[in-house]
Image 1 (tube, rainbow, N blue to C red):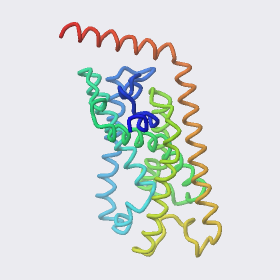
Image 2 (image 1 turned 180 degrees about the vertical axis):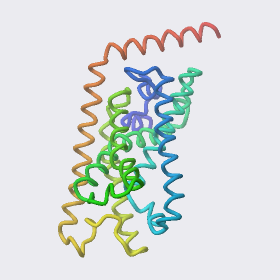
Image 3 (image 1 turned 120 degrees about the vertical axis):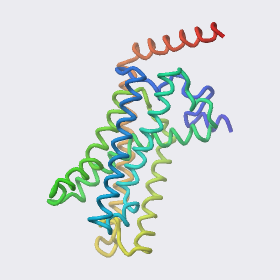
Image 4 (image 1 turned 135 degrees about the vertical axis):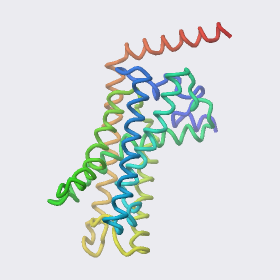
Amino acid sequence: MGSAYSKFGVGVPFDPDYSLVTSPIYTPLVLAIIRLLYGFYYLVYFIFKFSWDSIHFPRDLKEFFSYFTHLSAIGLCAYFWASGVQTLVYALWKKYPLRHWPKSFQLLHLWLSATAATFPFVVTIAYWTLLASSTSFETPYRAWDNTSVHILNSVLALSETLFTFVGPIPWLYLPICIFTIGLYIALAYVTHASQNFYPYKFLDPNQYGGKVAAYVFGVLIGECIIFAIVWGIAKLRNKIFAKRRTAILGDISFKEKGQIGQV
């Protein structure tokens, strides 16, 4: 079972290079603060949206969890909180809790990381190519809403790839991400059966017929392409900052030896 986990990047020790809590340009403390600020922004976004929609758009609120856009944003928020807390604990106390958690939790964290690195781009591209309209920025609220989940989401996901040492994502997470999107597509049809609407119009076979399969296939292919691009960027980033990464690991090793000597 251990070798199976290792194929998913869950080895012993977990994250030996400290890639999940370090950055080529930020100190761990600054990285932790940035991640927590991102997570806090999305938490405020959800609280405000729920409050606003409950008054002005109660139907939209009932349909909130039917949209991949919102589920992806929730995942992004969860990732920034999870990674931010881990990084903060490491920065302040040189502890790495995730290293001591069960392997299943470590795998789930990497799975969440893979979705946070790729799903925002799927959402952004799909929205602006298939769904955006003249009403996307019709009011200040709609402009802020669409900017938060259809633009900012990809900006923050890209910043994680460019400015941290996370990744490259093991390729075995690609079929898992595709499976996750497949589950959502199934949920969309469950939504239609139970609530009589399609979250995304291009999933309606009555309106688009055989094109629905092409759209679904296009989304899945898009995820594969995005996954490969993100993987390549992370690989190139690690090559560019190889000396910086070696220096960080050397500093970590020196501090750990010092702690052992004090004990």
